[in-house]
Length: 88
Image 1 (cartoon, rainbow, N blue to C red):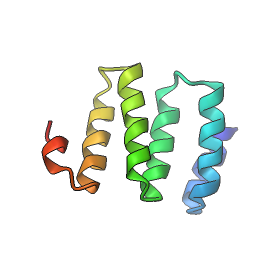
Image 2 (image 1 turned 180 degrees about the vertical axis):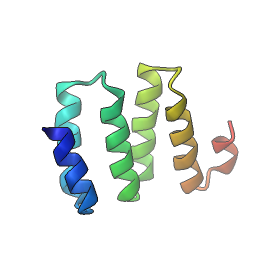
Image 3 (image 1 turned 45 degrees about the vertical axis):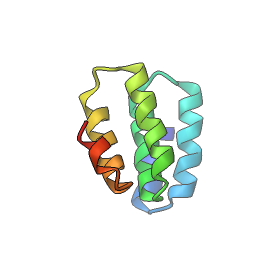
Image 4 (image 1 turned 90 degrees about the vertical axis):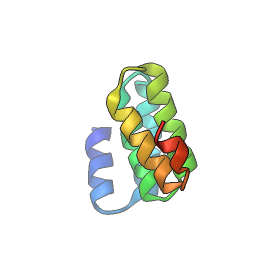
């Protein structure tokens, strides 16, 4: 139910509220990468890039082979204007 609520709040651009549910679902299932992707996406929408980067790093910690996490991290680093690091 939390995933649906997050998706709904995201569509309404009620990001602060969605973030509350992201934290709740991560607490329930901290190994589900999708939960961290959701949270990182919400944080990007809030322009809280440093925190989104932490989520991206957590995804890579859980699953170092997750190609999406590297792409997402590159996008976040680009938004932070850390271009050299984004290319790595």
